[in-house]
Length: 358
Figure 1 (tube, one colour):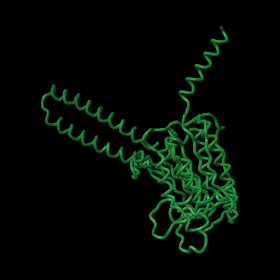
Figure 2 (cartoon, one colour):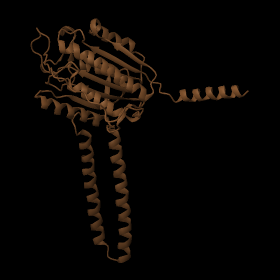
Figure 3 (cartoon, one colour):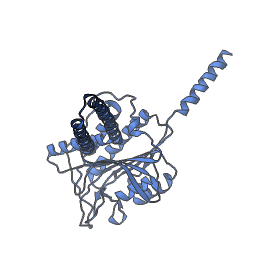
Figure 4 (cartoon, helix red, strand yellow):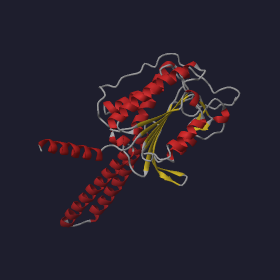
């Protein structure tokens, strides 16, 4: 009898634990040109493969996600047809999951193009795909979180008789370790699922008209992405996606300038409403620059100070027009309540603005 009771309690515990478990999956689409004739792209792709798997494992453990699905489009599968098959068929019924798209290879942009992401090059210009187009197609799957990690050049290519530019950085990028050992400290705010919305983080090694300097260990930009993710799950210092973008950009620029390289990364965070027809709607736009959220908060505070100053100016006029002492006392009490109420409303608005940047 005692054994039956213990078994029943164990089954109940497992049942209620499963009710609260994370039900999302992680889908990792890896397009790494590890058969490239360019030595550093080939070797860098292999390092990036290892680094991505390590960080996805850490993400899975921290978030309590049971299944990770890898779509490794490397080697002979590094082509547009294989990518189309994964996006159109294998991701057809994966709403609210987490999608991580990783690309390492040649990239370029056509003259006059207004696209932000580089065009992905698959062994020929006739098979290339616009990064913005792929981003749109992944958004159509309505994931809870979409991370695009693209390590490729993004400068205009006018001569289509040769492959896009191949800048090289032969020095090691000296990867860093997180400041404390990695533990189970998930950031549920960053990776949370908000039904009806998709968080999109674009991490691109090169902004418009910039090159990417790839090395055997993945390059400076990729090492900073890895370090930032380690900090997210270890030290709890990077607590918002705009803050993560700013950190990666600043550190990459600092280290490339020390090497005398011309490389400028691009990182931005946006929240999209679930796709309605064929129109992606931005709900919260996070800036790609290092101070986007900080600037927005400062502007809000500036507007609030102007509003509070106008209220106090009106209060002074009312006080001057009040003659009797008792009436002035009542006016003063009412004005204090109005100022206190306005400050409280301003604080709530500021907190909502700060939360929207996460």
